[in-house]
Image 1 (cartoon, rainbow, N blue to C red):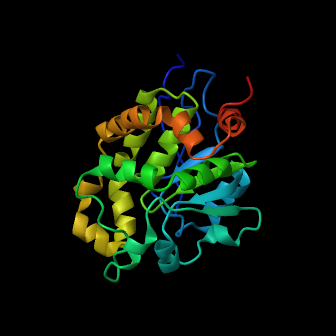
Image 2: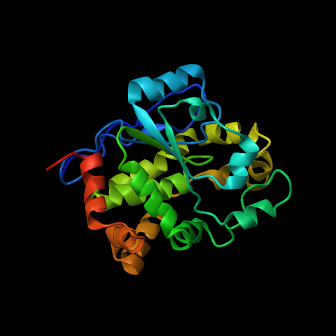
Length: 255
């Protein structure tokens, strides 16, 4: 087995707190290629320098935005929306009707009463078409950056599914998921500074935003038992085998 990546590939951008490249993570056919799949928190605060870094140096050509329509409406268009070379794919893992019924300033429904494993599995059960659409976006040429608000929950589940589908060892997937804890104070600070997320942050508190590695262990185990694994889930979501094979080619390269 390929050794685990020893250092996380952070992008220390001016306008985000939790942006990192999945390049270097192991698979049975070699490491994930850098610059193909990048994960992040909200991109609204990107500076002009950040945009040049992502577009010109990294080669980002697709943004997969996992926020709800309500979040996007409250935040407004981000800087990458102004770049003609970058295509945006907007999908959501959360039914938006619940979000818009919340009090002003609270944009996400309170779905956490039964814990994060329940929430993550609801993403998968509620929105298989959204996961399929995100996977197809990853098949487009150029790099793709996927983000939600904090870059750890919705983004974490999508990234875990993509990595698992190409054979990345579970321990590497879980370790990457847990890396968001290294930046969580900065992530929460950025969310607290926005009118969109401030009320949620104050209501939930910092500690509740930290991720537990066991959460992703349990989620992936349930994907195995309920869907026959990540590849089984993607097939049931509508992806063809050629598209699933394409994910491996995009992320790792041809055999």
